[in-house]
Amino acid sequence: MNVSTLEWSITVGVTIAIILFDVFVVARKPHEPSMKECATYLAIYVGLAVAFGIWTFSYHGSQYGVEFFAGWLTEYSLSIDNLFIFIIIMASFKVPRKYQQEALLVGIIIALVFRGIFIAVGAVAINNFSWIFYLFGAFLIYTAINLIRDTDHDDDGENAVVRFARRRFNLTEQWDGLKLVVKENGRRALTPMALVIIALGTTDLLFALDSIPAIYGLTKEPYLVFTANVFALMGLRQLYFLLGDLLKRLVFLSQGLAVLLAFIGVKLLLHALHENELPFINGGEHVKVPEIPTLASLGAIVVILGTTTVVSLWYSRRHPEKVDDDHGAPKE
Image (cartoon, rainbow, N blue to C red):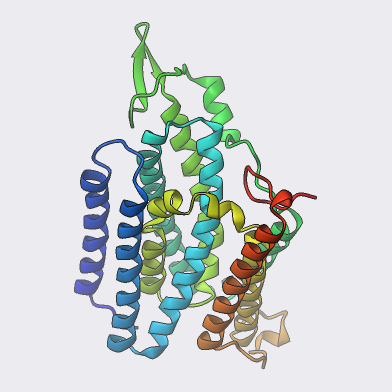
């Protein structure tokens, strides 16, 4: 894929412009956005993603267009799972509703930074070490197995990093917007928002570890990996408020994502075998195995996500008493 410096510059510039628009226009005042506001901005962001995919399809070719849509859908589904953790963090820290929009915005910006770093590292690794696909594939299958084994999200939004901050720093219970540090009794103290940002940031780091290998299983183009991640994170904040209780009804999302990650993991392992250069596998020669075309991958992604959504909503409608009110996991 031939992406000019100008194209990269425009893409990064537009991304920064949208972030600044979100910071200084959409979230200029702490408030809980209305359903109309959320639906409007979400429709704009999804429309931009679809328009970009069509442009990629027509300008760079159908193969890259399909790769973008497959990557975008995969990253979007993983981002929705990320929302479950965001909900738990907000509830655990009792973040006032009017400040949740600002906290989510910071969390999404941190996610963009982490994913940008991992995209660059992944691109360098792929270009220099063909065997990295073995690691990516094995990691995704391992992650899928863990999702199947443990589909319940923890009720506590705190992690080891947050607990370390609680032990080592002076804290206050005072909320003051996005301020991370305030003066209390003549001493500097971390606000609850600082702990929320720490929790969101460390969560974003863990999700980046899953999402980047997943999308590199669908496209090897850093430009498409970057844009798919950007569009997947755009509108995530609005989706958080818009879906609300609907997120709790997606009771089989973890199982669906496990199937999706396992599928991509197998696809990566097949590609690794096809490109094999490791001397202890087939004498360092390529292994003749079938590879899964990107168009077939896109079809599989649509079927997996569609089936997961339909079955989840059907189950939650038929068995509302078995759906956990806190985070939607089916009760035993």
